[in-house]
Length: 145
Image 1 (cartoon, rainbow, N blue to C red):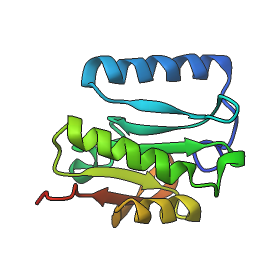
Image 2: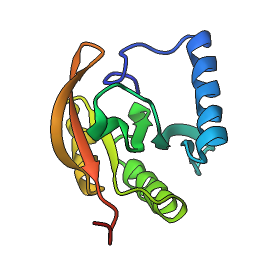
Image 3: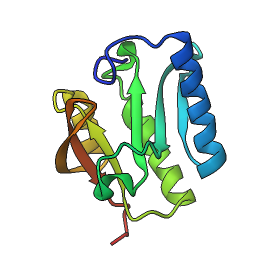
């Protein structure tokens, strides 16, 4: 789940900070991340949604809500990400009006790059984030622009 994000499992402190960050997004902005739960066994297999992470990647990125998704390895390749992100995008675009959304992906993460393309994200640049190269993508809602 974390290979392209940070490489190591989170410790208790990091998990707690993440939880508070997520609650803060919903409280302050009216959007955030959803847990993705597999119906067959009620197991949390990932998270999807939108955030304002203020990554410092410049106006063309930081001015827009950032799409985010992360799934455990056992969920990869089964369609969960497409289904969950499609639902998250539909909800977000109905509830919030933004001219576009953005995301960043490690250029070696071919699975996420394919997912982003299926969701309508298009590459608009590259940058460095925390010492690593990232691909920057954007998505314009249907009927916008």
